[in-house]
Length: 205
Image (cartoon, rainbow, N blue to C red; front, side, top):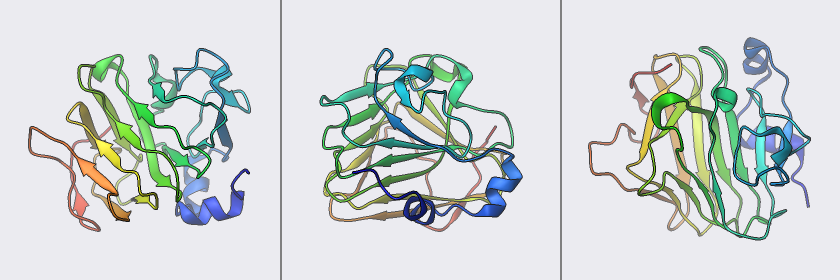
């Protein structure tokens, strides 16, 4: 069952003002893997077909039946300075693990807004040991608020192979919400993620 569009918008904290500022409409894109089954920036992997645009909601709802290891090789999911990111949304139908890793290091980034896992969703992992750095840009302008909400008993894991920056370079607020085993940050260096609701001033783009 596909999640209700209106419910997702409210869950992920979108506002009409944010959409208006970014200049892009919002499309729910469902991962099918019908292209190469790997690249987030390949249009044929999505339904409707198309490279995800700023404000799009990227939904994994179990249309594929194996664990997913996904990446990107172009600036297609990075966008430009000042643009909003894309949302990552795992429904309860996505029981298999989703891992997003870096293939090109710091050459290109993945610009996101929010991350949400429904109850029963499989684990989500950012970064993969032994691979290149996954460069993550959160949002596109200072002052934005982003959420990482995990309502599943499976964890969201962030590995050391992830660099997180805040788009636009200004202060952002990142709010965590999780149940039980919700969030695991595995790091060998001082993490740039701050406690919930506190602004962070990491360098952005």
